[in-house]
Image (tube, rainbow, N blue to C red; front, side, top):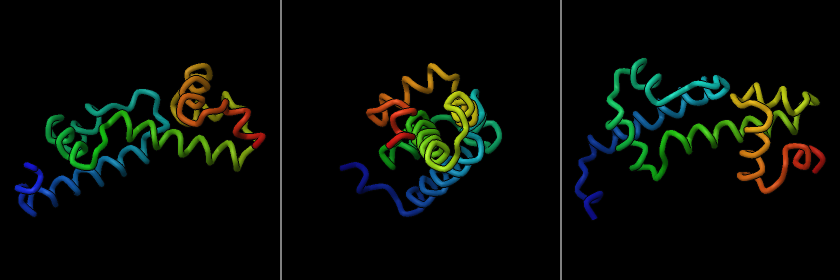
Length: 116
């Protein structure tokens, strides 16, 4: 119920931080080491400020990064013939980590997804 008492100004700030984080992740998701700390340092936010803003939208840094990477991986698997290890590199993973993560998120291996 405390969310009801947030001011419109606070909600606008949360939205701005969320959208900034989303853009940053879209631009940097392929970098294996991209972190919340990178974002906060480059944009001048505190980590707590970002965590609160993302929490307002029922997400967190790791989930947003994972969702963006999986979205990009699905696009690459669907639209290219690049080998799976190359797709993994393009979305910021090594091959085995990518295959495990992709299967956990999508319910099938990258190879199965591409064949489908």
